[in-house]
Length: 258
Image 1 (cartoon, rainbow, N blue to C red):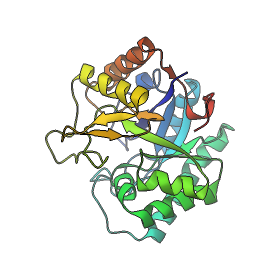
Image 2: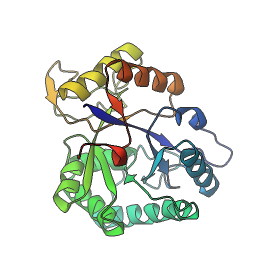
Image 3: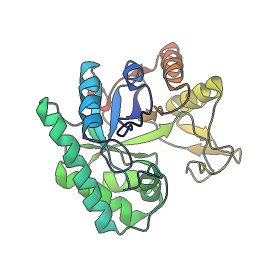
Image 4: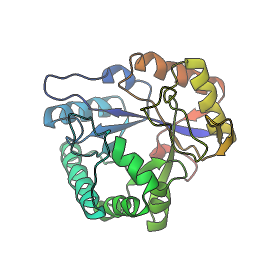
């Protein structure tokens, strides 16, 4: 049986700034990555997002990012491994408190944006983030870019680690995502995106922008919640996975072991 998790980055509104249609997208995903106030989100948004996810039966994870609200956490910062460790521990703790109110366990941790990309390439940063997750709770699942330094660090320290692939992003021949600064970074055609997802899940590979086959493991698929047609996109991907008889289930609810 082929199974995969669908995750989405949520709780990224801030104050009077509203981003995404999370009430609708939660009908289709199985894991929610909740912003913890550094790159986006605030206490009220976190509280509301946690409650919405619980009401929809969606498992919840922390989505720690760089302290860069203006840049939405997508700009690289020159941070030390110790600073990365501290940021991740702090943000996991913030979300844990809201989960404790509902006696709801945290499923996973997925770094956001530039922090995620930096840790995918930088071994020391990856190890610091994995250590932070492990020190808070060894039972947490670490989400990271498939076959990257981050997933390797998680596996080495003993965490259950979910290799993540992206439905709406293109890939480079080294397995990294195409930079958002490039025009071809995003896939906007639903059918093309669905075909890429199905190939990654069923065949364990993706065709890069250099037209080479890149092997990767696909445990969880990211559906971005802030796109212009995010809800329609999430529904379409879910329908196509069902047609291919691919079971959509949260990491913690999968029958196989990662």
